[in-house]
Length: 93
Image (cartoon, rainbow, N blue to C red; front, side):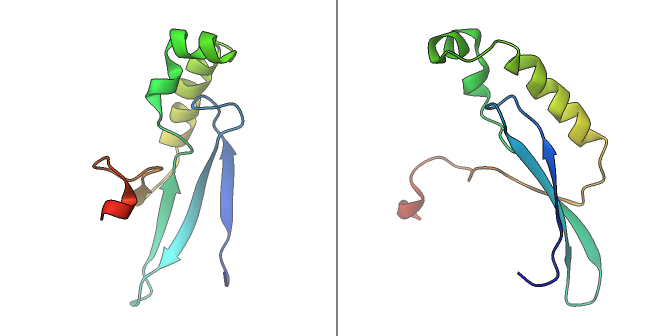
């Protein structure tokens, strides 16, 4: 992928072992922008009921919040979503 460095951060919560990433991109005029991807924003998987039913620890709720706080301290110019918006199947687009 050329001269790309991807910085990874452990941000469990959405699921154990979830990872977030930062990387720089350069536009055609030479301006550099830092892109960030949070490893998971699936809040539906953080309810106590879901975690218990799935055999996952309730501590994932706090770990998720801790991961967001960690990422909030980093400089990001462009936030990229973990999932597409708008719902539906991507094959429909």
